Image (tube, rainbow, N blue to C red):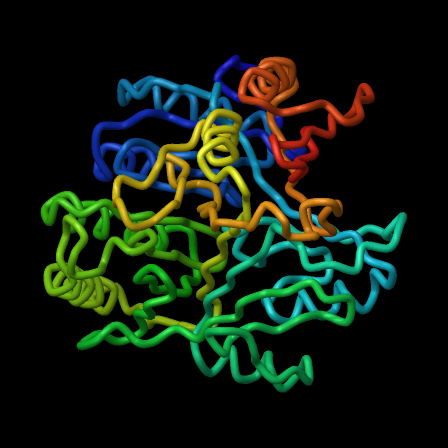
Amino acid sequence: MTTEWRLLDDTLTTWYDAPSHSAGAALVERLEAAGTDVDLRPNGLRLRTPSEESAREISAAAKDLGLTADPTALQTIRFGIAAADPVAVRSFWETVLGYEPSGEDPSRRDPQLTVRRLDEPRPLRNRIHVDVVRPSDVVDRARVTTGRDPSGPWGVMLADDEGNEVDLVPGDPLPETTGWQTVFSAMTFYPTTSALEARRLASAVAKLADDAGTPLQIDLRPAGVTIDGSKDQWEDDAPNSGAAFVELAKRIESAAHDLGLAPDAEPLRFVQFGIDAVDVEAVRAFWVALLGYQPDPRAQVSDIYDPRRLNPVLFFQQLDANDERTKQRNRIHFELVVPDDQVQARIETALSAGGRVLDQTPQRCLISDPEGNEIDLR
């Protein structure tokens, strides 16, 4: 197998650098194999494919186009919950997230969830918490299904039977558009009936995004294409103003209509994670180093993000040093999957950034950040 690919979560995966959406879309247009997931970005694209044969075909097409593979930063971030009653907790979270019983996002965009049995009582609130934003009607149905009334300072918090909390936030339609939702990012989804339809839409959107100078996430799946403006990029104080983004969204709608496609807001979802920390600077620096993330440049936010926009945003909140939660292990933790040839380098990075190895086997390494928030490296 070509060295351009790595096995990640039992799937052949690679990343190709590209100078624009359209340059990456040129490779998308050459894809023949069914079942290949594509995440197209302004700086390149990630591909996940089910067979060595299709990987070889993609590599050959990329070579023809002069694209360079860089699989060194490939990673998948998941999250796990330890529960005394895993069945009940899993059911709650599948409902609020809209996930499959396997704990997977049906669109394979957002972090997979695992639930395992709790080994010791941990009654206090987690220092790691979850934000989920979905269309408002979907949020209303999830609240009814879980039987929970929202609470918390923002009136959006739900908790499972064991006190694990999620801020389940209702999104709003993007003004003057059809099918676009503002779910911490401006996002839309177009179901497609064939890979050809998906490729044609992706190519049209790539050209429109390049012409507008607006970075987009364009994700192709067998069920359709998700177009995402990235968290907060559509807001008026972002480099691309809200009004300009609305005009781009309307042009994308027109291109989709010309292809006979109609939007469906039901599957749209945004997921991010917050970490409460006594020393925010030190904890934030640890996660930046371990994950290869970048700090959000805005002074008023603590967000860090994946420069390839493939993994979830993390943000940080101040925690009082006397808070009892500092003495308890979280029930929520992260899981990080990297290629086998990169595991040791990530462990060394974690240690140099103030982390500690809590447990290690040939299959996994459990690491904590400087304040005990855990990540299971596999």
